[in-house]
Length: 286
Image (tube, rainbow, N blue to C red):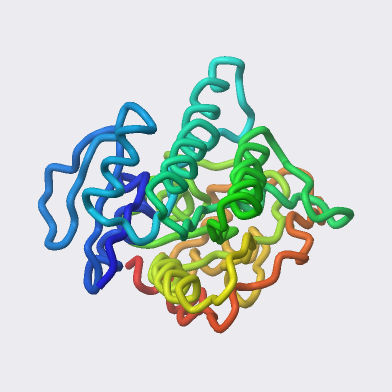
C-alpha cells in the first residue's frame, strides 16, 4: 500500500483516479476546495502556500509518488487566461518537483494532451498555449531527472468519456443534442481516439506499478488511447444508434477536412491496452 498524492482531484478524471487507486493505496489530494464527501483511504487538502509547506506535507505523510492531474484547459486563450495557465501547469509543477527534491520523493506522473502533437511533421507541435504549458511539465522534469534523479512519466491522453461527465466533450454533447439544441460540427472527418474512463484508471494504476519496477530514473512520454480511431461523423452515427434517433437531423456539418491531429510518434504505454471498445464503453452510458 503506497501513499499517493493526487492534484486536481475534483475534476472528472481526478475523481475516478482517486477512487480507483484508493482501493489499494492511501490517497492524499491537493485541490482548490476540500472535498466534503468522505471516502475511505482518501484525504483531501487545500494546496500548501509555499514550497516549504509542500515539503513538510510530503515528509509528514511519507508520500511515495505524486500524480499531477491538475490542469487549466483553454482551446484558444485570452490574455486573461495567462495567469491561470502559469499557476496550474508551471508554478504548481515547479513547486511539486522542487518539494519532491527536498523531501526525496522520486516518482511523479503527470498528464499531457494530444494537443502537444498536432502535426505529422514533428514530435512536438503545440496546437495552442495550453499544449505548450503541458510540454513545459516534461521539460521541467528533464531538469530534475538530470540533477536529482527524479523519475517522471507523462501520460498523453486523448478523448476520455464516462458516466456523470459534465465536460463539454463531443460525446457528452451528442448524448444531449436534440431538435431544441441543434449542433454545428466543423471538420467531421477529424479522427478521435475515445477512451473509456475505466481504461484511464487502469492505465494510471499500471503506470504506478511501472515506475516502481524501473531500475534507473527516467523521463518518458507514453500515450493512452483507444486501439482504433474513429471520425466524428462516424461517432455521430454510433450514438444515433445508441439513442435510437437520427442525430444528423439536428446537426449541421461544416467543411469536411481530412485533418489528422496525432502524429503517432508517442508510443503507447507498455504492457497496457484498453479493455473496453467504443461500443462497449458507449453502452455503459445508457
